[in-house]
Length: 268
Ligand SMILES: [Zn+2]
Ligand SMILES: [Zn+2]
Image (tube, rainbow, N blue to C red):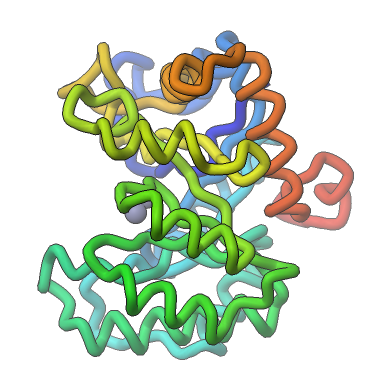
């Protein structure tokens, strides 16, 4: 039983499924994927994702504003909290810092990230963090704002083992995507081998970053299985072990997503 810990279900290419999201999810369920965490990239996207979660028992949502999403008005921590509360989010994000691009100025990204960290702190929700070429700044803000008892995940991790170890020390999980299957990703496969197994998550980040052998096609949640297979190969363990461990890790980090938590969630 696999969990796709990070997918953008409102942005999938549903052409192969006649436009029916449930068929795309069904294709994943058939391969053993039994839970999906749908990630918002803007607060305006949250109602649509909440509606998807309402229609599918195995979908939960995270609410946040992506560091590179341009907006007219920056949401403050209260606005993020209200949105997460209203739509039954089990996590805050995706948020973070991406200094690879400068479509959103670094200072704005920084302020926006802090607002999310404060919201997560207030709501005691884990944080889904996007970080690229902003290693020291990301780690510093995590150390400053994150309650290690609540924690979070560095999603679609592409940095080095040192950063992974630092994040784990701060109570974080490391989530690997299809990039781990890319021929050029030797350094990331090193991370896949060395991060403690009880700190690893798996994700697709679909529709982005389809794994080998599907590279170049729009990614789908079902291909989280290929990510798990790649990690299993690297660590010399079975795919079942990777599935079991990453699933246990997922529910430890996102307790609001555990099956017995859903009874209290009107959007569950
Ligand atoms: Zn991201
Ligand atoms: Zn994402």
